[in-house]
Structure formats: C-alpha cells, structure tokens
Length: 232
Image (tube, rainbow, N blue to C red; front, side, top):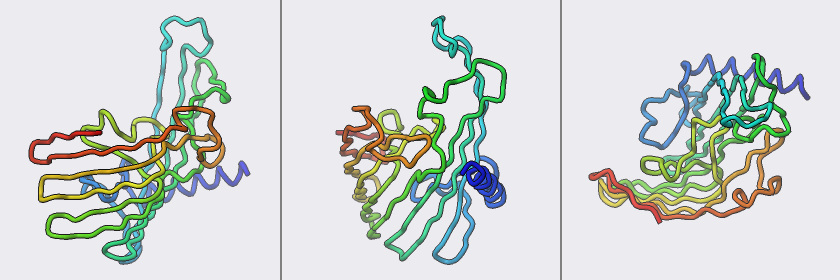
C-alpha cells in the first residue's frame, strides 16, 4: 500500500507539472476562472490541477509553553488533480482529488503524527465532487450545485475555503445561485462541513467534534454595483 501511494504521488506530480505552470490552480465557474489554464482532452472533457510546496518554521509559537512542540520546522505538500465534464451547456460535473502531506525532514522538534492537526494532512482523498445544473438567460439565470464543494462569499472574511490551509475547507451540500439583472446575486445554501481524516476517506462518521457535526445554512446577497454583500 505504501509503494502504491508513493507511485501515485509521483505520477500525479508529473502530470501536474506537464499540464500546468507552477502555482496554477483549477477553479471553474468563478470570476477568477479566466486566469487559470486547463488542458482540453475533448470538446466535453478538461483536466487541470496544481502542485504546491511550502516550508514553515515556527519558533516559540505557543508563547513560552513548556512543550517539546513549541518550535517546529517542516515542509507542506499539496497536490490536486481535477476533471471537468461538460455533459451539456446546462449540466457540468467536476471531480477533484487531493493529496496533502507534511514532511519533517528538517531539524527541530518532531511532531507527533497522532496529534498533528488535520489542517496538514489529507492522504489521497476526494476534495471536491459536485454536479452543476444551470439555466442561462439574459440576466445570468440560476445554477444549482449539488455535492462536495467550496463556499467563497464576498470578501471571504465570514465564509471561505481557506486555501492557505494545506487541506483547505469543503462542504457537503446544495447551493442555489440566482442572478437578478447585472448587479444582483442571491446565494442560498444548506450544507455540512467535511471533517478531514488524514489516513482515510473523509466522512462525517469519523469525527467526535461537535463543530464538524454541525449544519451550516445561509442566505447571501451580493450587489455587484456597490461591491457589498449581506449574509443571514
């Protein structure tokens, strides 16, 4: 199993470096989509991904706490590979896999893997998997997104996928986005935050945290003309 995972990581890394420049990340159906690059496999299939490596050094980050883990040095790896299938102009399917890991190859205090926060590791997992069904009218129409997805609303101060975190944040749920004219957008969603299990598939049965077992629902209105948003 270890040999299989190592080979898989090498293969994914090679694919990502071939299809995308460094730091490019796929993000369909967002305002930022124009700056990302995809490889067109066919008129209905696209493939994309990203590879990110980061070194972190924390010195006395617990402010003098008498613990061996008060100073840490480590590398973070995040690999993503995704596929977009356009079944029609109104129906899209997006699937994204992720492999996020932490490596302690530098001097410093060793981190106990059993206590390593889940923000660091998510081995060979399904990061996103959702179905989009949309209607395109004169004013933008509406879209329903069902499945494992990310919420990035407004300035992302209240609701965001936290991409700076090695594992990032996703939700299981449904979201309806409706456009009214050129400047008004209404998002209505019902979801549940997905807990990260570093060594197995992420699901809601493997956590005892009341936060991850909580539901997350909301309504978010955006006025593009003024750049303001309201959430409920």
